[in-house]
Length: 276
Image 1 (cartoon, rainbow, N blue to C red):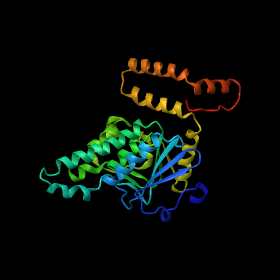
Image 2: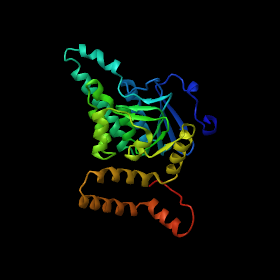
Image 3: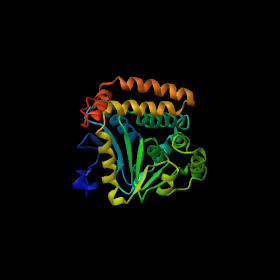
Image 4: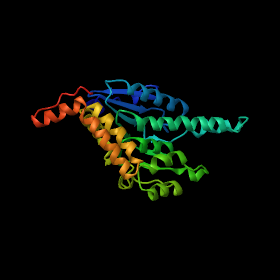
């Protein structure tokens, strides 16, 4: 299957903690590659941030897939990396704050990114790993995936993952995950709005790539405008949201790609995008 999709097998991924797999059609697949836990270590967060920043201005990238190598999507922060800093003079306060800020910036970069980001989830996504899934624009999960925010089990409430979760589902569903720390199935995750679709594990890469390629065929300018407006209006009251959306749509109508797309529709032909 990997050969059909032009996706490398785990043995071919090498030693990089974040592997770039440019696929045809403007799709970039970023693979977390520090199994078994694929933790969001300092190095991983730095690599993710740099890759997201680079993709932002790379016209060849139209859609980003976030995937992982191995049987666990992401276990969140590396507790073994954090714990030694309790011996710092400030008991780790400065280090912990810097790491949480770094992680929060990565999550915001996903939401604010002009390109759509799709999480391809196989195995456990826990704590900040679950936050990563919730921060993506879309999430496709295998039947083997599970999701949880288990910080309460170790005396550490998942407060930063809470931000992403509470913006993806009803508050009571988010609070249930945060307060109990219990894992939920992919079917339940879909029911409560954390993910979009559940598929057999053998089809996960194929279906995620189909989503990405379908989206990549659209005008990147239109996708950028729409994605930005979606998240902006989500936190507004109804009147402000409509006022903002109306302004965005007016400007969008004046864009070259909207003129081309509408013209192509009326003339029963395929549009030619210039991404402007």
